[in-house]
Length: 253
Image 1 (cartoon, rainbow, N blue to C red):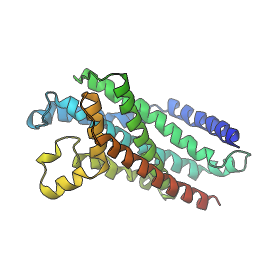
Image 2 (cartoon, rainbow, N blue to C red):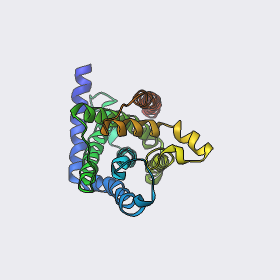
Image 3 (cartoon, rainbow, N blue to C red):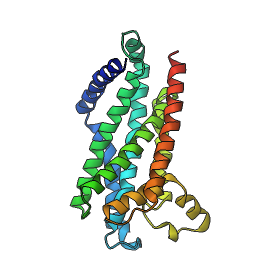
Image 4 (cartoon, rainbow, N blue to C red):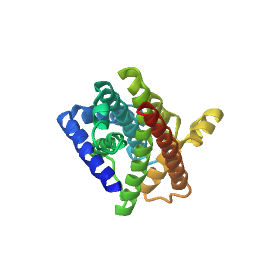
């Protein structure tokens, strides 16, 4: 049964990835906004922002990577919604394949597409002056946190992809996710914020994730931030996966 599921998922993931490679505008679109934010904050607003860091782009990049992930998952919901509307899921279910493999194929495709977008954004940041002396293990830690965060948000995106009644509704859920980094330590230290806003910023997942990534890239002690970040990611993943599978089974019962 496991071999059957893995083989079916690999086959359907290949199909989804071929669609991505034939439509690179998806990846380009996903990277345009984060790179635009980099340009705006580094070259227009950066001089007026006090971050406590010698290089503002070094401080800024972790938050931009989170925005890259958040903007990328909207396409997961979009692609899933279109497949549902085309009736392809019904055709898959009429074949002798594992029922959940079609869903996992969308999730794995999202991981691959967002990983490519993150690489493009990091390369753009390097051109703009980002520098890090972090070693291989630190970069692997950054990749692990972003990968887990992407997986959690992708399963969250599956829910509106399955339940939305329009294309706009399927992708609109990502807007609050994109705005969340603006009320965190992504752009400025939380110490500069007024009381209630600071309390929210310091106790929401993006701040822990951004601070952990920033510490790894800056070769600074990570402290408890990494455990808080992993806790948020794992908790969100478990809840999102549970709800997504529940909705999926009810829809195709």
